[in-house]
Length: 188
Image (cartoon, rainbow, N blue to C red):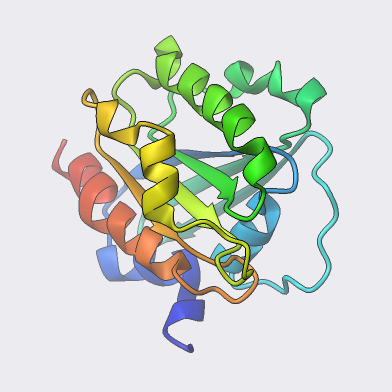
């Protein structure tokens, strides 16, 4: 479990990027676990989380690489403004509450609209199928099928089962970013 808790900082340290900067937008419906995930990535306490009204930003610099993570609230009245934050995005992290089956259609519509947004054309997507620690959670493979992720052919994408509360699977998603997105950015 200690390995899992290293978070985003350890990924950046391993990369040792030279002057690269990555803009990450973290989106999903309200109560999906975005802020908990962000705090987990930053190795912060996740025991008290309040709903995000607006946005949170975490910026870190490590070994010359700067990562700016924008956690934007997912309430319906805020979603209309998501597109205002998408310009120059290098990676979209989309968080889904795997245990909230009643909202799968709604989250699928929101994700599809994001994928179609001009600002996110070709932008890699990491989807965290969160709350896998709950007995009612759907497997990530079922969610991927339900969201028709196989139809996203203009970008690389990954769905990662996780629990933002326990950190299970969170590092695996960060490793995917390290191996696919940051490496690409460094090569350019």
